[in-house]
Length: 615
Image (cartoon, rainbow, N blue to C red; front, top):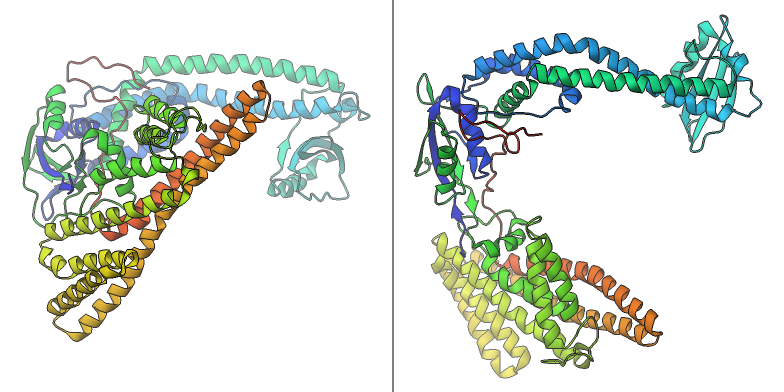
């Protein structure tokens, strides 16, 4: 568990006609990353289909929002891709011939309804005003009118030959424009440039403002009814042409072209699907191919030479949420240690120490347990909440009160120096573990002897230096570590210039590890801050009447849980990333990037399966 493992190289042999379907089956497992072996003939299955897929993409731009109203009904795609594409595009063309008339009418109705919506709001503001809308509506043919809605910060300039009447509009500027009809377009152009919305008055709209407003509402009701009927007709066409089946096939082909593209050619009729899998046992891939009755052969082989495999963190399920910290650096390389098992112990301990309260920890643990299946990192919250509950017993704190349960050790505010000293001692042990993890990485890359000659001496120097600060009699240990380091540097470098560089690294790394150690004092400081904040809430509650006291306790604990929980989480993350990881972790491994499936739930059980409609 202390070392990442390389992903397994897999190879699947299948027919060209089933390549898209088989790739989708593999992608649905979430356990494959496609990679073609280098220096081999690549069969770009969809090269001859590029024109057809481009045609589909263009149609999707125009019709996509209407297609989205229906359900996709994906079924196993077992035909040759070029045949499937040609048949699907023919079906789309047939649908398009019937749908274009409806879509043109629908878009016209929607555009008219939108224009009338804005015009109705303008006319509504004229009701009861001094402007006679009937006179405006009867203008023409020499005079013309329109309305414009502008942003509040716009500075419109109108020619002298038009009349601009302002209309009250909160957050915007609205004007009713009257002028020579043949010249009004010259006014609209600069207004559009200022992000103005031009609102035209239809020729049929006349009468007083209240009458015009009623006419607009009536017309919009008619349009709404018409729009509903047009959408219903489009939905019927969707089903009549079985567009759910057609679009699902096209989505699969587009997905394959975008995510996979080319596969290794095995023969005129067969291809290899090759790549990496994080399914180290191979069971999930075999089960997926068997469950879909795919006519494909799966095998696992050593990877081709010259290809770097992705690195997999192989940890028990309960540890996997703690992989989040290592992944923040990338992925440990093949010559680096995986710190996840250490983090599974250290992270809850640090969090619980800073957030030690039995009741508040119970709230965090319950929230993490409730969210554990919806959000994988929520398991971190559950583990840290349990640790906070344990330290709540150690500190004798229950929802901020220290007078309800006895402390198994001490109350933090009664011994602040001890509370700060314990994390510093813990830091020494943790940083020593970090140096040992660096030794694990050195062993994996075959450089353990160099670690013993140099880094082991540095570790002894660090421990001796700390011992010297506690007891001057321990200075000999620091001197021994220094001598060990320098002799190892001389043996390793064989040049005095290399020795001088090693001395510089010793000074830099020595100062750095001392700063790393002192940084853990913040663990004790935040434990004291948490206790002080809890004491402040309890003191205010005790000074208030009973009802107010309960309210203050409840609200105060909620604030502590939200605020302190966030701050403590940030500090725990910071200590891991910047104080612990820099001793051994660089994150140089290749990240495993699983092939995303074409659609959720699109892979079905085989040629004879009856697929369930999927949105």
